[in-house]
Length: 170
Image 1 (cartoon, rainbow, N blue to C red):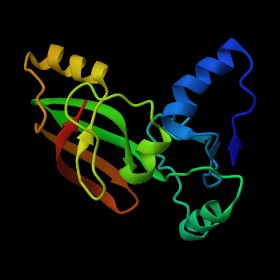
Image 2: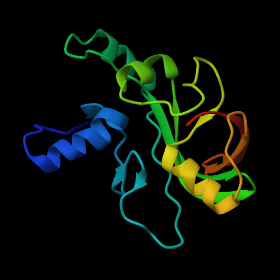
Image 3: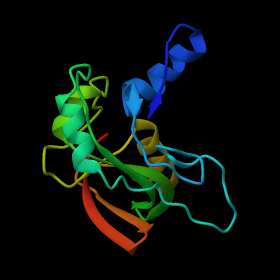
Image 4: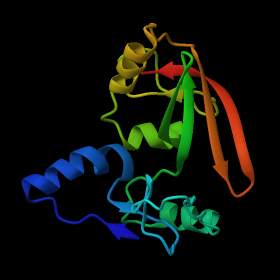
């Protein structure tokens, strides 16, 4: 468990605005790892080595405890990992977050949709940041439109996975 602390300094307020209000909330629960990890992956790059973020085996028990804890106002779960993102015939390395829309968006209510919409519960789709959309448009010389196919390629303990999902929001 990582508690992000008291947000009294300007630097801490910036951290809170960037991470706490958009990605982590006040507490992050993660497995121990021999490599220092954040929600974005390994903190220290290792040439020629691949590290996956350890899976929490006690997921159901932790969610049950969080739901029953009086001090917890809200919680959400997410799966994070590195991916290759193919869109508009261009390839980008990035970090992807698998979320549960019904708990994620109410908790991180500062997310603003520029175009399209938020993911719906049970829906498979991709949402990208406005700056990433602009980068894709500059690189491909093509306009990004809602519904464009997004190909996500990941690697994990069970091998490669490739998923094509529609772009639902920016």
